[in-house]
Image (cartoon, rainbow, N blue to C red):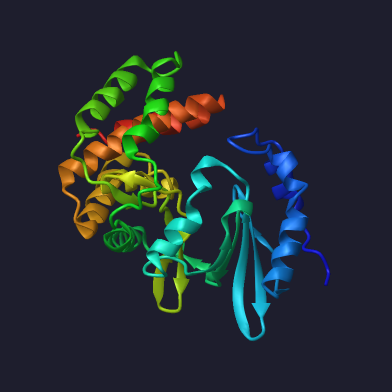
Length: 296
């Protein structure tokens, strides 16, 4: 069996990743051919097409007899730790079906979805409503293994307070929202946290989620990815479009509008903090523009 060839553009990007709770990207890449070969042998799979890649994973279409599947290997990092756990928890309801997994190695065997059909192929209003409806099925009570939202956000809020590049008004507002929203009685629901348009693929005539980065918390935290993707469609005055997307998704998901906007503003403030860490002025400007667009 011919080894799977790793796309050069992907290996160049991953090689630059610093360690984040596991090996560096460069060190991990050296293990990927063995991980793929081991999974192909263990699960009796044959490659069935060129690999697809994301920021942290490679996905190889495979066959097992007449069955078409997808073999996914993911770089170890905290956000990906519980992907197999929650896919098993969802059991194929509104999410890609998990066939088998070796979580210690970051290897999963999944149903094969139509990678050519994601929610970028439908009008944005329809896409937001679709994601809202998916959230009603995905946001079930969180498994106990997931980090609670307050614990997840605490280090991000702390780093934000010590980044001088962030406008002070954004720091104060974001930390104030966190104090108001992170109450002991908030729901502890299973959150996908990265449900943007490319992370919803077609299963025949149904839309399902892929690539969760799960935590436990309030469903209002789910909406920001709808706003900072397909940004070109917001035009030069983004506020109306941003508000429209929040309203459509929140109403479809059954999230109160006041809560939806409050959580979106909190996460948008954290997005500004993340953007400043990249050292890219264009990313900072984009994040601040989105944060302003969420204002009343």
